[in-house]
Image (cartoon, rainbow, N blue to C red; front, side, top):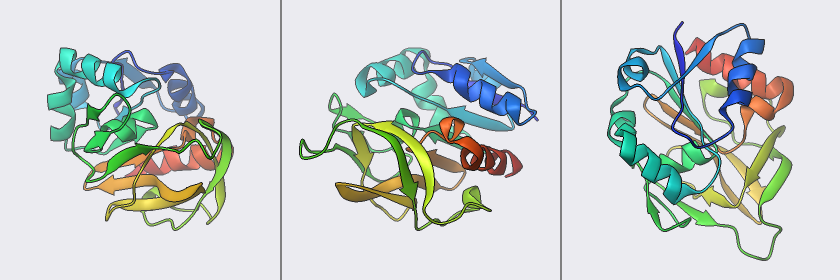
Length: 193
């Protein structure tokens, strides 16, 4: 199993690497297009600001590569948001994999949403053996609007898409690597795809 975490300078990717280590898998950190293309599974992480993250992807050519990948790809947090059409953060065009837009929470709630919240309306093999209303760990100021590709939902001010799927591409707004036993199970499910 060749597992690659895309290392493009956005995010705390060590915690994802350690989460896979705990499951018994070695994940390689790489921004090498050939290594990413040859992987069995790809993780596309992201923490930070959308426009600067997209700039780093464009500079490395990864913005062209990622949408062409054929193996299972999991975008986490900002990684998932960058796979959408557009995000309000920095008025940034995304990779256009998921047919939805990313909006900012209003100032009527504490922003960012930080901590544990539940996921529900689960609709994918990614959630095998995960029960409805399972708690996941989130840190985000922006959310993906619902679309036909929504596979999990969460409530925070509004009901939004906390996970998305399009063909071989998956995205989670929550951090499975920081979500205890249930999060580890989701990573395990992704590896088994």
